[in-house]
Image (tube, rainbow, N blue to C red; front, side, top):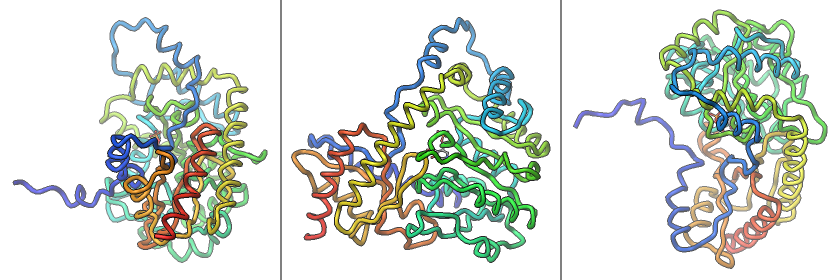
Length: 397
Ligand SMILES: Cc1ncc(COP(=O)(O)O)c(C=O)c1O
């Protein structure tokens, strides 16, 4: 049989999805599973977006421009303007999800063997995008002890080599929920300017910030225009994960011209989903107020509930809708599988994402899990009860 590529063999499995077969088996046995493991919001997609798709009278579902509809990009630029991000339609390439924007960013700025520094734990699929691009991720550990704040800049400097091309920041963070302060974003910007590096900022959770704290975009830092690349998406903002629409944004013309070649190679982003995404920008601001209020309540239930469980440590998130919790166990991998295979409480169980897959340093985060608070409040409360019983039972095994 012809052999599979080394690259293919080294593609990591998604730590979020690898438990799915166990969940399917548990569901077959009739167990109810509370899914705390995946970032699929249960929030309704804005009606304006759905209606725009229903109302369209397209007769030929054609390709769009490789950079995406001009009308959508112009409207996006206005949306960014309202968020203190001063860009034009020409600085934006519409992509098939933020995922494709990340791939385009890596393809545009790195060659095989180049290095990208990323604070860990980080969004696990960065590993997959890096492998696809032949890029080496150089992790820099952030700690649950200080809610996963930015590690000291001196630690970043120690990791910079001739091969370093970029620093990748996820702000607010998945899986940490950490929201970088203006000072932290500025420190990264200064470091990038000093060492002539790109900063790729994944800001797909921009709107999801709590406790009155504001998001600070990499694009709003003066003097960083040539170094900053922003990755964005409608997936979480408008609860439109299935639309598969994101974008790559940069004021650096060379970055955009190069990324456009990748965009041309895949022809265009999805047409119907662009119609929905363009209309979604008319979503009334109250939508976000309501959504954020809901996520704040959920976060409070989750964090307070976790803190009450003996031996559990949790980093209180200020953004996105995830948190990392440290459990009084040795292997979260084993625990997560046991929850599905061997445990039930009144016919129910929970599914969590073992956090080790969000680290690239081996043997790190082994006793941590990522929990997404994308369930209704009453379900979260129930899931916490189940988790508490499970931890006790697992620990006394
Ligand atoms: C931090 C982060 N970036 C990017 C993505 C990619 O999202 P999409 O491709 O759906 O836009 C996700 C999805 O969960 C994410 O959490």
